Image 1: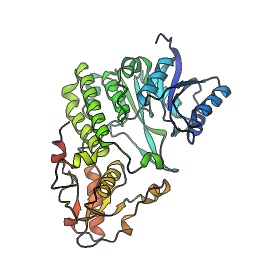
Image 2: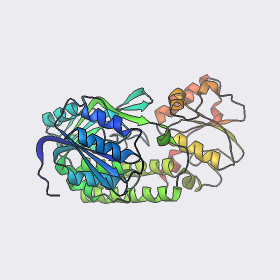
Image 3: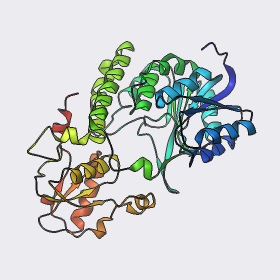
Image 4: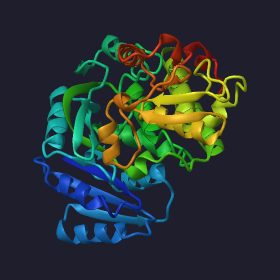
Length: 400
């Protein structure tokens, strides 16, 4: 760990596992950055496809690239290996199946220097096979330096206006971090955490930062593909245990930073979000009378449509089909065409043939999104009594 940092150098750490179809595109997008004072650390985390060989070829072609080959240990382990090898004054991260536009690190570095920031955060681009939409942070762009400014950010960074509305997007890959902050926290993250690794890193680092800059630019393409959107094959007990471990780690981290009073209620809501998205079946079993808890009024034998092809909607749909006590007619989404591009069977609301006895489960977290969907369904002839949404009070009572 006794690595001498190099001023102005950015270390970009890319964990690589079974990514031979995507890693070349990711590396090329880093090599094409307009800011070229980079070291690119590719951590092959025990891949058994051609990923490691691809990384080695790129290392031979550009002196800025270094490759680490290691046994598979998961994302936290791979990132920690990359951090241990890094020289940069700033550290960034990328996922092997994503890519970034050429000005990303120029923009992040200039913002970091201008504000003398410990963290710079951008928006990002949700990429469905080339169809992109910008996803901004819900915290306003600006510089958060004074204690008053940072406290305002901390009060909404995990969960802001709506019950499940995240303020500062928990991802690492659309941000730049001062080296000392990364070394001081990310090497402490338990390697057993396999979901929520970004949140385990970001939020405690934000709580420890002296200055955070939030930009409204977006250069990072978060790419959805069939493997990343799969509807099934999940060990719900393991997912539940992971959520509990993540929650405990974050609570302990915030306690050390004397931040518990500010963030623990937000953290509770974030962890409930994870329970519903990652272990819905285990969560639904809490209420045998309502087999789609926390969606009220869904009974065995009902015919339903699930509206929403995001993470929650896919999980609700998967569970509803697998439990075999419901007649699940279709997964609906206004952006069905985007999801079809990556292999998901999703229908538009216009393709829905709604019977009087059918129910529509709106599986989204944000209340404003729910209300917009509800109004559109009412305009299409649905009855208000057919529409179901999250009982947020019941969800808030979930125990971890």
